[in-house]
Image (cartoon, rainbow, N blue to C red; front, side, top):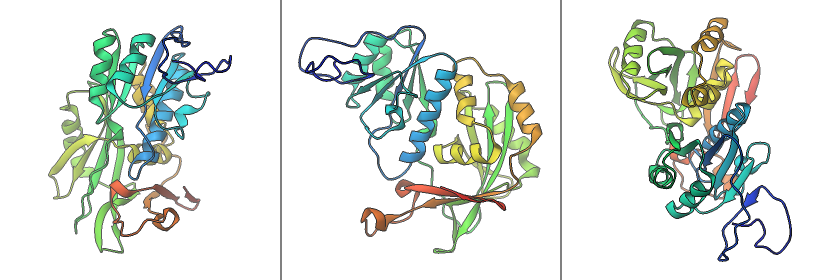
Amino acid sequence: MVPSAGEFDEHSHRFYATFETENESDATAGPRALIVGDGPRKLGNSTANDYVLAMIARELKHHQYQVVSHSNNPNSLLMTQWLSDKVYLEPMTEEAVASVARLERPDYAFVPAGKQELGRAIERVSPTTKVVVIEATQIPKNVVSSIPTLEFNGLFDGQVVYQLGVIGELKDQGVGKYQTLAKRYPAHLESYLATSERAISQQETPGLYQVLYQAEGVHEDVSPLTAPDIAFMTKVLGMNLTAIWVRLMIGRFSGQALVKASHEGTTYHGAIYRAHFPYADYHLTNQKSAPATVIGAQIERANKGSEQ
């Protein structure tokens, strides 16, 4: 793997494969973590997913890990040198990812949900690497209903569930239904907080989860917190949820800081999340508004305007 196909003598943090036998990439020194990217820009979770991957990289660097990124998206935030110490600009294939893992032998490998086969390829060539699946990169379910869905959010450390608040859906004025494309915080679910905590505590692995309610008192589903909700809740709570999750995954988590932050209250009292669909800007026609076609989002804060 070489930075410029051997044409020039240069010292770059970016590498890609060639048909030649020379390899100019040496294994990164010190504790290191590999982050596998989410692929090219696309409709849906793409922007939110890239945000989560960038926050993972930043937190790993905070804990003195050398961050090695494997991506085929030249526009990803992971391409920047302040997030990645080394970047392999490679296709998202088992062979390519395994080649990087074989050379780098990372302590941790973070792989987006839906790309578990890449995680297995890493484990085959580097058995000492702990593979962590980034469940947040899944596309949110779009529940369209005449009844608003409530989402209880919590972090499970394997023993304790920490409450992160409740989100409620807003009615889409275009279709006259409630759906996951517009949400408000906070919503209220006081009678079922204990039920929600119990549902999350029954999950097999630690992580960020949400319990969905439609029929009163009956939880419909328990699922990992998705990237858009992580970004929204991070803004709402004034806590970097991705950073907290990373600490949990690498054994650096302390519930004391989370409890203290939650007791101090949120940065502001209310917020509204609205998915963004600038189809005209992309010359797209006949597109239906759904989580799979979201391009961005807007967060409206009480008395403070909005953020894109």
